[in-house]
Amino acid sequence: MTNKQKTIHRRTALGSILAGIIAGLAGCTSSGDGGDDRSADGAGDVIQSVDVDGLELVIELERDTIDQFNVVDPSGELFAKRAIESGVSHTTIEVGTDYPPGEYELLGLNDDEPVETTTVTLEPDLELTELRLAREYPEEMYEGASDSQIDAEAILSVTNQGTGPTAVTALRFEGDVPFPTHESYDENNESGIYDPENDFGADADSITIPADETVLVYSNSLPFLPVNVQTKCNSIGRDGRFTVHLSTTHNIANITLEYLIHYLSADSEDCVIEIEETA
Image (cartoon, rainbow, N blue to C red; front, side, top):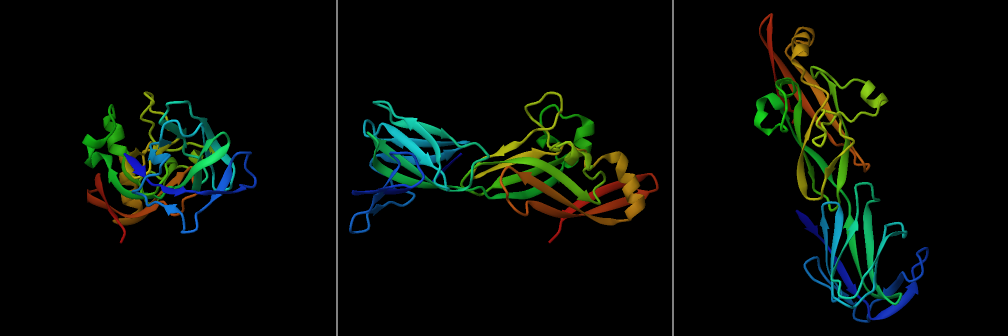
């Protein structure tokens, strides 16, 4: 899925060189009638479109009009530059998941002179939208999940409603969940997230969440371990509370969900759990 956003400014007179940026990253002043400010659905003459696709900026250009393309980050530092060869109408810029959020300036230049500029905002907006017990949705677990993993793990839906990608780096369960995340996970810098690329069940370093997408994230710390359910049932009685917390490569606050957990005991040797999100 791509996230298209662009504000194109066709400048008719060149202004002063941008302070703090390398030679050739010059600003342009607008024409007397306010210039040609295009909407997100418009297109520039030279920089024809800018899309956020996964971890990249994808830029479509008019052929043979510029020989260099620069990207300047929100602090005014050069983020990336590309030489544009004759006949080229497409280029990409790797954004990754650890970029500074904010407005980026994209400049097309020819012989070090600005031809056209556009801005694009890269800013993730992450939300933990749903938590489900894997045992209740075994068909949605990752391929190769064992019965013990299905019984003990959780499936989380994580949505990025922002304009730039990010990555989840840690998953923690706190409170009256059967098996809260142990403090050793923080001490050893373990994410507590299943790595779908690892055949040995190791923790993932991170899970990428592209802009405008929802990604399933799987716990890897056994928060609903069945052997602990009976113990909790006996110790806290019927009802409890727990919190799920995500950490990311960007400082996004309040990526949490709070849940009620009900321990339902039919007899002294049988206890089942139900969860519900708090209002």
